[in-house]
Length: 81
Image 1 (cartoon, rainbow, N blue to C red):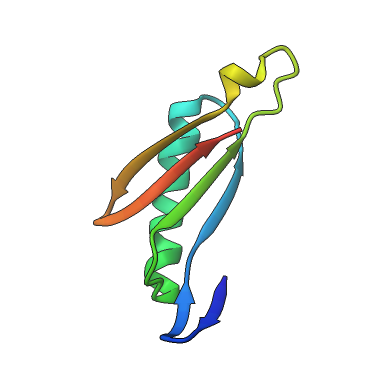
Image 2: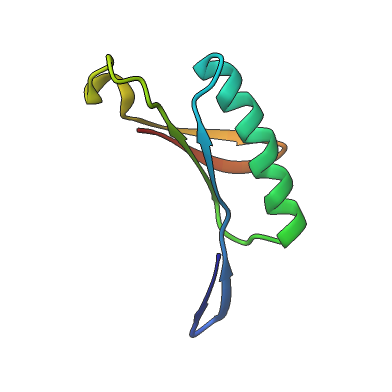
């Protein structure tokens, strides 16, 4: 996404993933992909990786989390929901 603002343009990457296999594997794959997108578009903001857990048995308390990660030198915030 690109937002114009007084200092020029803000570029941020927001990657969305559905939880598949395991949470660890989904996050690992998503971090790699998000970092690649950030490099490709020249993002000047931290990246965001959103993981959607569609398991109807889990409560929202089990699904919702936030953690900061660094992958390939890029700061990416991982959001679980």
